[in-house]
Amino acid sequence: MNLSNTKLDVDFVRSQFPAFNDSISKDWSFMENAGGSYVPKQVIKKLNEFMISTKVQPYAEYPMAKIAGENMDLATELFAKMINANSKEIIIGGSTSINLYVLSNALKYLIKPGDEIIVTNQDHEANISPWRRLSEVGAVIKEWKINPVTAELDFEQYEELISDKTKIVAVTHCSNIVGSVNNLKKISDLAHKKNAIVIGDGVSFAPHGFPNVKELGVDFYTFSLYKTYGPHIALMYGKEEILKILPNQNHEFLEGNYPYTINPGGPNHEELVSLLGIHRYMMDLYKHHFSDDNLSIREKISKLNNLISAHEEEIANPILDYIDKKENLRLIGKNKIHNKNRAPTISFTATNRLSKKISDILVSKNIATRNDNFYAWRCLKALGIDSDDGVVRLSLVHYNSSDDVNRLLDIFDKI
Ligand SMILES: Cc1ncc(COP(=O)(O)O)c(C=O)c1O
Image 1 (tube, rainbow, N blue to C red):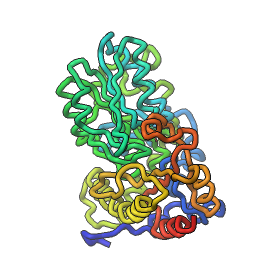
Image 2 (tube, rainbow, N blue to C red):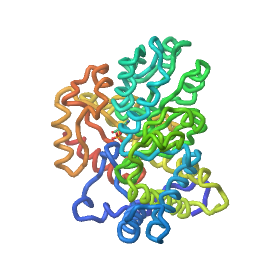
Image 3 (tube, rainbow, N blue to C red):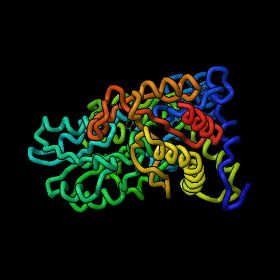
Image 4 (cartoon, rainbow, N blue to C red):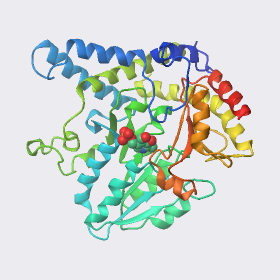
């Protein structure tokens, strides 16, 4: 398949994920991907290989340790290439929450009383609390609030909030509730005119296509690898020139040894090596759909991103349309994906039923979903939604099929 109008071969995609043939999971339409995705067989293979042959302390001279270390370095290098960074800009930590807490502890030393920090009320708490906590060292916290009708962050409000005193802007690339994609490039350009640092949370964006961090222009960018088809770890990108000068958060003797300075405890070895499997999966996907092998890893990822977006748009738009038009349902965010302006992360509430009740019905019909605030409780509060009952969230990724969608719409029609 090499046509320029190539469509994603979903059967091929699904054949790469053992969960679709597993006795526990195979009969389910999985729509809780924003909580954590399935993993392809390439990841499981790399994890197994590491555990069988090289699960020793890496970087010694005997083969088991040498190969372990080489694979850890290679996984970091390949992931850096996939997002257009270099290896010294990649931190692999336990979770996005941990990575951002460590980063905030380091940036704390650059904050003087009266300096300003902009956080949103659209973000997951992981990209809010660590920054709000810097009020302890005198930072003034300013909140960029969503428009309560559209649930979006209006740029005009940001222009009013930012000032010469702004030191940090923490904003999500894509909300895990609203789904809208925020223009990080525009946000970063304005922040940089004020010499502020931008921290973009890409956790809800990256599963739909690994971003080009240099094009986004952000200073830091985080995403959770367990939502991008990997194990339960997370990646944080940081611009090398900033990482170089951040105060060491690791052992004293590691002073100057960035990016480890921002990665106390270091990465989980076997899980880091299993990331080789995500790269392999992406390259297998590329090879299945395209013939030009002379492109860089990043160029291949870009082509895959377009393929994935087109498929996601095709499967998610009928759901958005249905919820938007159904009288007793309230859709959060845009009612259509167009030109990657929205992720297929679809949240809604009902006027006549609790979210829990709707989620229970869907689960009883083999749609794997849930109701919650998904740690974006400030966003729900701003929208007047009870954060205990929360929203029902249907989050799709590229391995979801039109069969999944038809099954869902059929059930919707009956409730
Ligand atoms: C948008 C967003 N940001 C941050 C996080 C936190 O990620 P982690 O679980 O890796 O700490 C999540 C987790 O659900 C999320 O959805």
